[in-house]
Image (cartoon, rainbow, N blue to C red):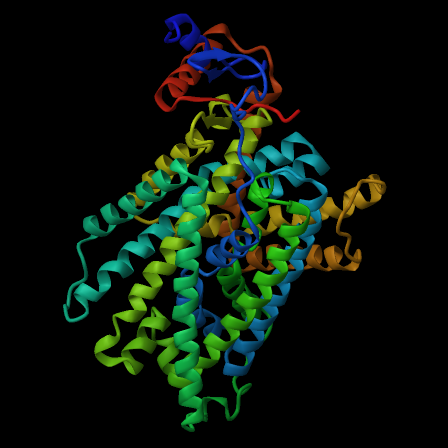
Length: 504
């Protein structure tokens, strides 16, 4: 007998704090697992291979194909450029190890948001959440999607004086975002398989670059390595070189957004980090050695896309391989962003700092569909902004400030809660060194771009009134509560989602 409308409405419209209703043999009922029915919550479906491909796939985006030019420009020499790439990798590894300790101590999804919330409380955590929601996540996703769109069409315009139409590129970016939103909403295993495939593809592309460079070196093309440190710069310029290098290593912390979906997280989270970061560092350094084997420093400085220039010089008529490789790399980067960063909004809503419907799960697919769709819509909105690169600059300081604050929380918890269970515990000098380095990066970024920093701080401050009005202040007008309830009901009906059931 089919369920009555009253029973179905009760299931779809449930917004209370009680356990969600789910269907059993055609009826909706309360409770946890009953019979063969699986509770509505995120599944642990991310294994060790997926951990590696999430980190590698998110790190290896457009950075290694685009950043070598700026690293060389600011470092001044081939040798110093390679030093910057190596040290940036080691610095990222130190940060990732600190996050491994945090992720195995605070076993919640949400990355630095969850750690700042645990260590320093609601207000600092909300400010991070606010800025990520408003700017950092959607602009990052849209820029990566636009990079994908530009490079996927580039092979068709190699012999053309004019590039592809702007509106065509933007619509292709929208298609990329929409397609990957569907994949991530439909199935976590589908999303991880996409990540696996495109991670392997981009690593193979870099292996081709490395192999070609080594062949050129064996052929005697070593003139660019004769006086490697001639012309090296120092001071503020080196700091900017590290900014560019660290940009290419960004996203090493993304696996921590998925902690609750990792199989055996206390084992696989640190293992994934220990495998991924050294691998990426070696690949990045060798890829730059290959670039310098084929291209002179002058050619590299004049190139807007180093990998494409490399391909044109080495592969001739097959030069289209490089733009296609960049396109595959950025496509995987967008997928990794959806797979990981959407969980931040999910966790923020679950903690009561975002609307309730963002923390709901699709009943049959067991995916955070509302959070994914929200991320999709925000990203599409920024695709059509004429220039959003400056917005990313406004918040580069915020990124390092938040990551540094999370690791400072590790130190704070070591002092205030020494008996907290820590499956992994590193020497205290490791997080202290990382926090000091983050402070240096924030200060140097402020000195290098004071106006961008001021604008970023001003927009960040808008989070304070939002927090006090929407979260801290509990006695909201009845009509506001009614609007919020209506939106929640609408989202539940559209996506067939309910609140997460707690584990017994």
